[in-house]
Amino acid sequence: MSHSDTIRILGIDPGSRVTGFGVIDVCGREQIYVASGCIKTPPAAPLAERIEVIVRHLDEVVRTYQPQQAAIEQVFVNVNPAATLMLGQARGAAMAALVMHQLPVHEYTALQVKQAVVGRGKAAKEQVQHMVVHMLALSGTPQADAADGLAVALTHALRNHGLGAQLQQGGLKIKRGRFQW
Amino acid sequence: MSHSDTIRILGIDPGSRVTGFGVIDVCGREQIYVASGCIKTPPAAPLAERIEVIVRHLDEVVRTYQPQQAAIEQVFVNVNPAATLMLGQARGAAMAALVMHQLPVHEYTALQVKQAVVGRGKAAKEQVQHMVVHMLALSGTPQADAADGLAVALTHALRNHGLGAQLQQGGLKIKRGRFQW
Image (cartoon, rainbow over all chains, first blue to last red; front, top):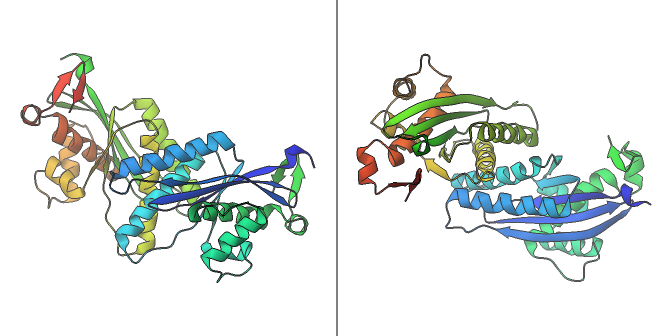
């Protein structure tokens, strides 16, 4: 398979304190690890500063790795309304950083991520991390939030581009190295 | 007073459906209307699309009017957690668009806006609009959300740069055409 058939996906697990990200390449049935990491925001800093940290780091990630598609985890409404507002602001900033690069952004719930990566929606967080390590043949376990970013990227890969059988079932066509649907 | 003593302020009233903005110039004791408007997001569209509408329009506003400072209204936590999350996402995206241009972003509560513009925190929305029209000597009444954007910009002007007496009291120094504090 030629290089032009490779799709690079950026997965994001947004959070008010830590935003995890993971970059993978999808080439046919294969998913290849590219990069992952955590963006930590100073909790005591003014909101504008925290938003800036998220936006600048994600901007750098997109410029460095040049993903073609992005996937972001949907967040839950918290019992604490102020925490919900803060999480919303962090997630809105992360999405803003992605759309500014004309990246198509897909959203997945935590349930969809667990179902795609582990095979059942009730999987524990550790199982998701375990499967991320296994599927990408990583030599070590990434930080929890980075692993979640990779899991979101894998979810998008598994639900849309791969694995072989899904490619045929899903009505996707490969044309000039890009998936069309 | 020379042109270099003019400070251009962009005020934002964020909302999940409509984001209002207003641009004013502050020159000594004077506030001069520059522009205002509403950014409306398609309510049925996917979140990424709504975020994109906010970010692209605000990006255009900043590029067109080149403000030196920005002010954004703080939002209230809604009784509906899903609405709070959505509002947070819209506000986070708006802030992201501002910080990406290295704009310093200041936050003001609705109470601070009313106190600065009308003189009392319990003022009705219509009074705020009325004072915006009066202070900026507008020939017509702008749309409600645009007026709110202008009110936020005026709040930042009144609390920080003007009006004369505040300039002296607040310890602000004008140096090479920029306010320093």
